[in-house]
Length: 290
Image 1 (cartoon, rainbow, N blue to C red):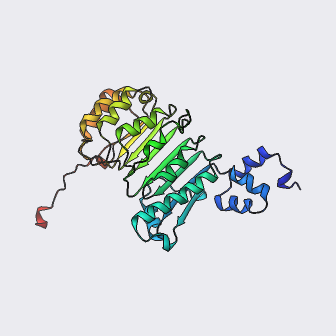
Image 2 (spheres, rainbow, N blue to C red; image 1 turned 90 degrees about the vertical axis):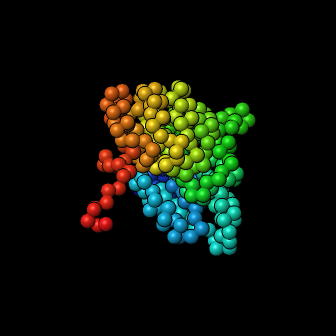
Image 3 (cartoon, helix red, strand yellow; image 1 turned 180 degrees about the vertical axis):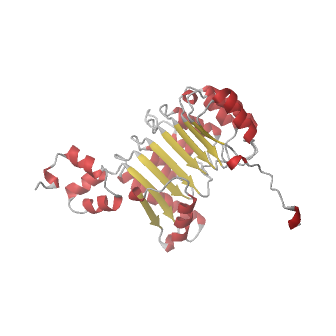
């Protein structure tokens, strides 16, 4: 029987990439050599840092996509670190930053959930040069640190290799998001949920650039901002590679507009209408009830 240590490092790393996180961490505790291998073998991480277990449960219930428990980690802050909102956000960001620094060389697919993005975690994110997929879910966004994710450091752009980005309650501006996308010319998937600070300027900027012509998936959902309405639809025609488009729960856009434009101009195979099941925002009341 061969021992793991007898395998070439590159083959052993390929094996470790498929391990669930708890198993990978236990492997790293067996020796210094295995710990070093463990730190370069974590390619996918779904990380949530919360003040209480209830907050973690509520966040999990709000998740739209299927949860991958194999690569999920929840950290609950110590009670003494949750005395007020500012302390909670500061300590959440410290925890995220420490974990990202530790696995910066290997992470390729990352989702993080916390209250807000602050300097420690923003700077740690900016150093993940090999990242391909990024998802950020915020609960109390007031962030001023999005600039860290597209500004150049030492002449080199941050990230630069993303193919997919997903933001929820991000508090990011049109300009900041467009700059972030420009720094990652290989992006083909954009998912934005409850991003109320964005406007039609984002769609205009996206449609005018090279990136707009290569994006295959664009989901802009659950945005009730009055700045997001039927005016944004005129920019979709320029996005000629779209295979999936969704405006689910963007109630200032009508189903009819989206459907008619897709039938006549867009011809997108996977289309998500603003009102599910072709319903409208008008609630009908049974006369007998009144």
